[in-house]
Length: 435
Length: 143
Ligand SMILES: [Zn+2]
Image (cartoon, rainbow over all chains, first blue to last red; front, side, top):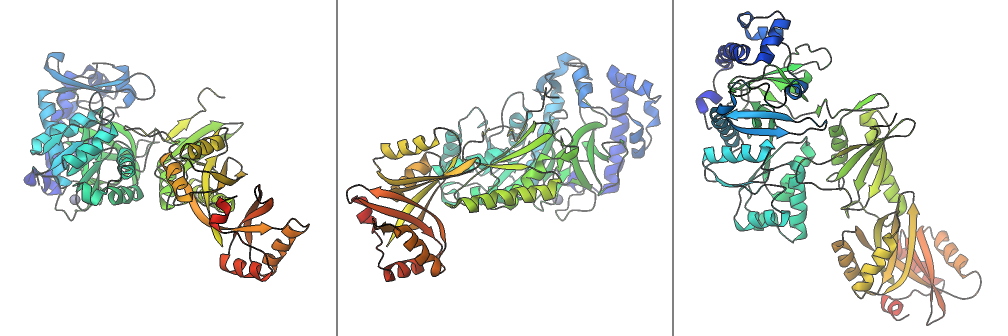
C-alpha cells in the first residue's frame, strides 16, 4: 500500500476525519466562492449548520450546468494567480466546463493517483505506458503524475497522438509492464497487435492494465485480459473533480475503493434527490474534502452505481462503488423505455464472437427506432444465410429480453464501425431535430 | 470428391462484389464459379477459385470475414431431368441440400452443380451409386 495508515484506517475514524474536513470545506466554499454563498443563503443555511455527516444532505446539489453557467472561472475558490493548470471537457452541449488546479491540487492528485496505482498492484519497478490522451482531457496527465509520484518509469505514449502501430512497438521494445488507456482502445490495440502477428504472451511484458473513462463490462474485462495477457483493473474519475483516481479496483476487484479521506460519496435517487442506503442503486454524488482551487459540494456525477461499505479482503477500509451501471446522461429513452448503452454491451458480450465492436443508432420514423450494428467475425460467420439470420435473430431476442424494447440488429462487415482512441462513439442519436 | 469453397460476408450495398473480385484478380486468383445469396441487409458471396486458401488470406487482409468450407462439385448430364435426378437421389437418402448453384464448364460443355450438403460422405456414396460423377478439385481448375 502507498499510504497504509490512511488506507486501512477504521471506518469510524475515517468518518470523523471526513466530518472535520467537511466542516472546513463548507466554510472554505462559503467564504471564497460567491456561487456557494448564494446557494447557502437561498437554502437559508449557514456553514455552522453542518455539524454531522448527515447534515450534508441539507446542502443543495451542484450540477454540471452550474459549472457551465459560471464558465470559465466563476467557481474558483482561489485567485487566478494561484492556479497552475486548467483542464476542460467540451461535453456535448457546446459550453465547456473548465476546472482549475493549484500547485497543492496537482500534488494531492498525484498522491491520490499513486495510491490508486499501488492499489491496482503497480510498483516503482514497473514500466507504465500511459495511452490516455494528454491535453485538456485529464486522463493522460492524471496518470502521468501519479506514476511519477509512485516512482514508476512512465512512458507518455498519449493515445490519439501516438499512432497505434507505434504504441505496439513501444509495448514490445520497451517491455511496458502496465498499460493505461480506455477499454475500447485496449481492445483495438489487441486487435491491431494480432494483425501484426504479435503473440502477447511472448512479445509483450504486460502484467497490469488500468482501464477507464468509459463504461465497460466484466465480459470486456475477460476479453482484454485474454487478448493482452494482463490483469485488468477499473479506474474511476470525474473531470470536474480532478480526473482519474477518485476510485480504483484493488486486487480483489470487488468494486472500486473511493478514497474517503478525499471524497464523501453519497448515493441518491436521481428523480427525488433523496439519499439512499449503502447497497441501493442510484446516482453517485461527490463532495471534495481536499480540493484547493475548485472544491465541489454534493456534485452530481450522473453515474449510476451501488456503494458497499463492508470491509474488503484487501484490508482497505474505504467504501467501494461497483462498476458503473450507466450514466443518467447516456440513458436513452426509446418509446418511453429507459435504455442504457451498457445494457446493450452486456448482452452482446455474452454472445461469443460478437461484441468487441458495435454501435447503437437511435432514429425516429414515426416511433423511435433502435438499431444495433454488430460486426460479423470469422467466429460467428457461416456460409449459410439461415445460420447468419438465426444469429441476428438471437441477438435481437436477447436484447429485447433485457431492454424491454425491440432493437433491430444489423450484421455489418468487420472494420465498418469506427474505432477511436478516446471514448468510443457507441451511440449515435439521429433523433435530434426530428419531431 | 469434395471441393473447397470460399465464402465472404458482405453488406448488401453497391460495390462489394466488384471489390471482392478486384482483390482476387490483383492476387492472380482465378474465379471458376460464383454465386451471391442475400437476405435483407447482408449477403454471402460464394466462390470456387483455383487457390482457395490464398483467396481467404488476401480477402481477410483486406478486412473481410471469410470462410472456407467443403462442397460437392457434381457433373450434370446434358439430358433433361439430370438436376431432378440428383436432387431426388440425395433427398431419398435423407441428405439435405443447404444450397446449390450451377455453372457451365465452357471447355467441356458440361454443367456443374455446386452443392452444400449436410452429410458429404453419405452424398458421395449415394451419387456414385446412381452413377453421377463428382468432379475433383484439379478437374475444376482445368475448365
Ligand atoms: Zn479492496
